Length: 221
Ligand code: VGL
Ligand code: ZN
Image (cartoon, rainbow, N blue to C red; front, side, top):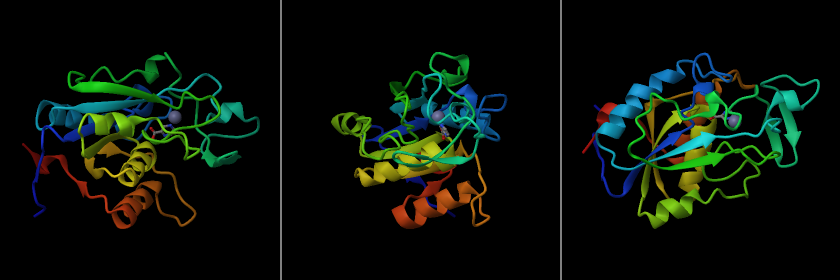
């Protein structure tokens, strides 16, 4: 039996990563079963957590991460960006489009900050903390620290991209980090090794960064 985790309503915050229609079934970059995170996140928001922050993937039309911006390239291929390898995606989360909104099934009452990321036309931003050039800060860490949050519980989409990169950066920035696995869903691209990017991300976070993966039923006030 896994141990229960007591949530401190003052210093623990729930981080909602990219809970947007474009990442759900029917969306432009649909994550399998992506909408399953909604009831789990809403339960957490109604229960143990008093404070939440949400990120919103928010790209300008023609964003450099869109395959459509690279003639002859297809979604899910990798190209060399000035800052390193960049996976190409279908056009998604275009600023102001319905698919880019925070999902309307989300209980937003306890969301105190909405951080938009990926708006720089030539730089993608998977992480809530740092753009994909790995140097440009979103300054979310400063806000969280100033508010007194020390431990972050991660939820949302996608486990293997924006959730994983956010978790890794949060650890590097000195936060305690927990991933709530049933409140996340992943894209699951096949890697050269034959493994899924979801399994690779989970292993890397657990082994290299010491991030526990827990289920939401273990969290209590
Ligand atoms: C995401 C790919 C592109 C994510 C965002 O939210 O994980 N993945 N943009
Ligand atoms: Zn994106």
